[in-house]
Length: 175
Image (cartoon, rainbow, N blue to C red; front, side):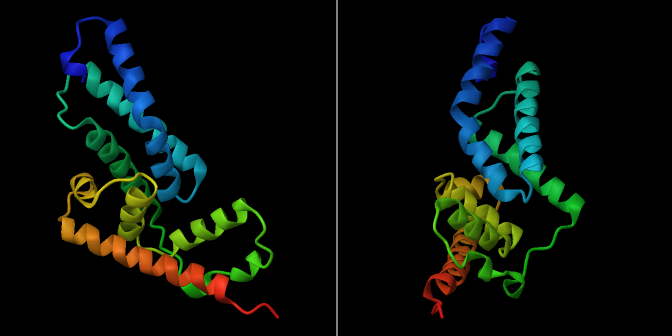
């Protein structure tokens, strides 16, 4: 998008604003769902757009802008996770008793977020990209650089795991 713009800072700024307007929301949701801490997710979100802006100033040609933006965010998330060496949470470590009186939407979100923590990084990423970003298997495969069949496996396994954990809460017999 940047490569086809007329010369001038004003045109580049307008293009960047349009890119931000189109992709900021879904990118922000992705970062929040993939990263365990909101502050780190926000940092990655901002760094992603800084890199997009830098690429535009370098006049780098981009053929699939949504995938390019998502790939930057994904790589930054993976880099951060490697740095932290964070393991995923085992099912037995989740304290579902915290949700004894699930009465509002925030508690359900917390349960879902805790459930996402039980997934491997690959499953979590595929699940978030499909469920929260509405991406198809082929789009996720392009962003993550793995075959569509691998993406499908990851999403299916993630959904099974989420169903298993969430259903335990809702099917428990309160006594």
